[in-house]
Length: 615
Image 1 (cartoon, rainbow, N blue to C red):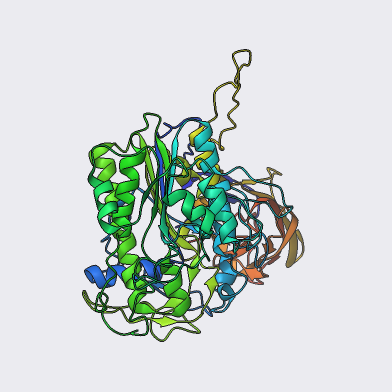
Image 2: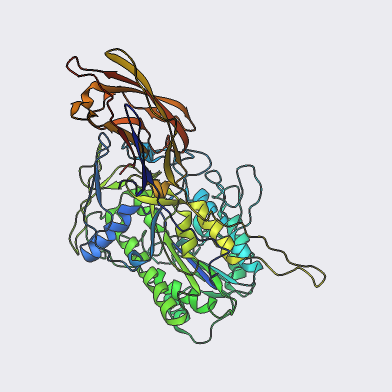
């Protein structure tokens, strides 16, 4: 889209005149200080799910996709498959993307590189520990670390802050309860694999609901086994299962289902499903990679949406509200194994949990008092359409059939993931999506989630009767910036010489303070073209006028246009996403060749300069 025309000024001169086009794209920005703070915050994370994992389930469930594209990295050409929203979260008002790099590894997301080479996103990605820490604290850390910054300083989690302001806190997952993602919201450990240590801290964290897998006495086929203490120590298991803590203990399917519908519920619940690790992913039949989802007999355990309902039933009893994280954790496991059948199953299960949460909001709460976020922590498996690499191709599929896909990694990738939000405070998240990807559009970083939740939760009251609570709000920018151009008013440009004459274009100043969303990840161009030289009824053409552009100064290394003849539009200066920002001053040496046949006289013309925001 070109720049919005603001005004045009022409400076009449002897020899040449200048016309100027201004562009402005105002964007309103909300802040946490200006929005309604939610009573409840619910974050749902499909671990390892990029855009294609979300769409794979939608193709299977509904025969529809929303975000399929074909991209050629060599040319930058993007072809978008017409999208149809089929999931409840795809109708949320906030639909952007999220970056998730860790403090080490790649430590950046760069759109030009992500879409300029098929292999770029396949290395240097975050792990779930660093991603969960960013989501749960608003701070980047190194891979493998939970709740500490790269320097080893302990970080405050949003779960801890929610408890400080009097809210209940819960975490629910389809994988072990102390896996990296749930742990990142309430725990701290320099080693994400210290599962027993994480279990102890989570049990003693003050959290009100903890649910997931990791049962020591069951296999992933939901059969009894000799006790295995990988995920939880014998002492901690005995504490939570025999009344040694203030948790009520649930492990059977019927127990979870009863909790989801009960009128009277415990104050706190520890739910340990009767599986070693995953609710369904690791059940028998894992090697059946091309059967339809649901072909292999399911474990007789609670589903993720039932667990979420039970958690909500417990947490909603607090009049001050709650924070809840729900994770579809085994989407990531399917991605690591490139297991398409189980991927679809797990993402569908995640979708059911989002539907359960949305239904709860509309029946038991409201969007005016509850914020719901749906996203992922990273992408796993590099899922793409058939025949992808070196280009990206769209996935295809029909309802009830496995989609046509290709896998390109057994690990995590640095590709953007979807981000959806609705409810009180979602406008702040939308405002923080101030970066622009050439394919996915506006995106925020995962740290923005933790920062926003902290802001919306607010602060605890004064610590004592003799203390006075203080609060200072620093709002987000009230305007997102502008793109404008001015031309030095230096009077007439008069050419000197004989038949070949020289002059200088007055200096042109372009100022670009737009954020990446306004700029849509593109730069700007100033171009110019001249009209005929006229003296009464005498004239000669603009093909006799040329320029050699030059950059006088630039905050961001804008490029001067090439030497050109001005009988057609020619670039005076050009920028891209990186070089556009700040102030750039450009000029040009002008050269006029008077035709031999031109009769004597005082000729006038004009150069019209136009500033364009690139598409």
